[in-house]
Length: 280
Ligand code: SAH
Image 1 (cartoon, rainbow, N blue to C red):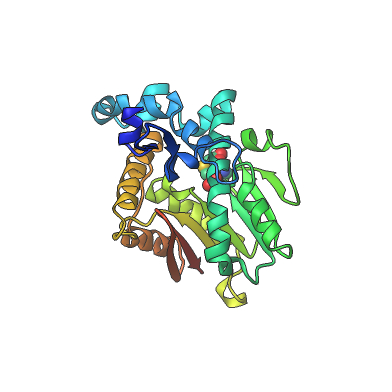
Image 2 (image 1 turned 120 degrees about the horizontal axis):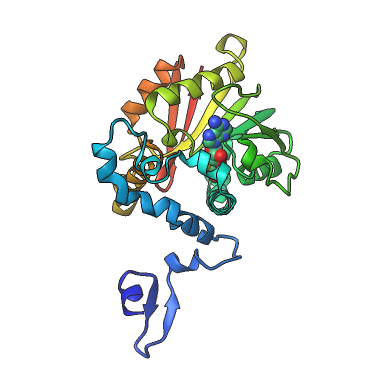
């Protein structure tokens, strides 16, 4: 308890009574703002153990990531092979999405205004798409996901789920949403994904759709030290799990230009993450 109080998980008063702090109150299960699933996913042995393989990865002959050194496959092959990891990971992402969409719709709702259709690529079990569909009933929402995720969906709401591979094909829509996707991939892979997105949205000549990215823009929240630290931890985590990376504005801009986009707008409002609207 001393250690947990020292690190801000609990507070203690003069009568040695402990109470929740803002940090621990969002880890209480079944409350509307509940990030416990995300924490459980990030503390899963498959996520934590690969940190021990960093040295072997540095010395390896082109192994993709410490994760692949540790397990002989990538993260998405692992979600396909291991039911427990697939479940814990998807629940973790859904808990983050439930948490974030409250803020997203309140502070950045304008991003979705006027859209008729949206496809959430790698949209997990659909929490974000369902929240958008509920807040904007005129937007028809779908989720493109890997078969091992789509096969677990029980509650579809009014969202359509499509099993597929974003590197092959993204169904047409006014907007493509990529929440916490591109930081899983290297620059060349991001360009491939964004090219598929560009094919899916309306061209500039015909009025122009957009890609909505929710991801870290490194250094976007300089005035809040804890956000900066979290961004750096996330960067490490992405390197270890999938040789991905968090990116600064200049790195993002290069990827957008290389994929044929003309313009973008960053709104840094979501704590450590930002909304980036990218236009053809
Ligand atoms: N967007 C969700 C999930 C992010 S995790 C959220 O923010 O909560 C990344 C997601 O990408 C995983 O759900 C994974 O299954 C999906 N994914 C990975 N490779 C993919 C591919 N080739 N095509 C479609 N989805 C993919």
